[in-house]
Length: 194
Image 1 (cartoon, rainbow, N blue to C red):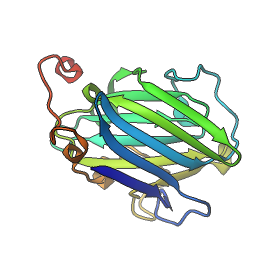
Image 2 (image 1 turned 90 degrees about the vertical axis):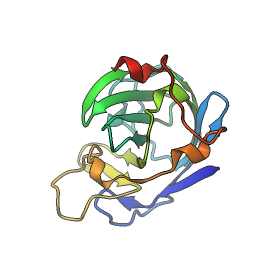
Image 3 (image 1 turned 180 degrees about the vertical axis):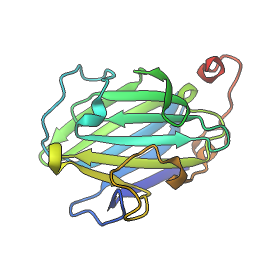
Image 4 (image 1 turned 60 degrees about the horizontal axis):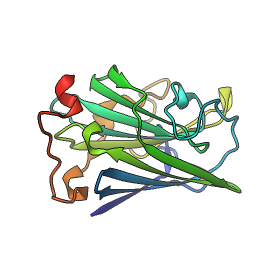
């Protein structure tokens, strides 16, 4: 199975005023493949090597996805930029990072006012029991920063965006993208060292 998503709203639910970020999730032999097609806003580029993790990538033009196990509180956050940098983070519970700067296959290409990205996120990075998901996109600088989301927070409830409000994530059947129909973890899983 392939999941396809479009980010069509800002963080409090107002509609966006441009083409949406489009994403596709599918299982491949060595992980979950994420394909991104997004508008390119020509924000200042970060300084960092293409294909490598970059700390603070969230401060730049970026697309983020979160895979969450609502029973254990564990989740995987991964970020992708149009200039080829990425950032993967593992959380034991809300905002409690225990692994960061995870390596993965990622490439991006800018063509005019659009960028595309393709990542292979290793199976081992995803916590077992994923049942919730959300995705985000950010662009703009300083007071012109725009925060967009797949599943928004209630309008007027918060003063500023916070993408770690896990209660607003929505259901996903992550097992549907796996070749054998189930995400299985063994004793060598990175999560067993958490």
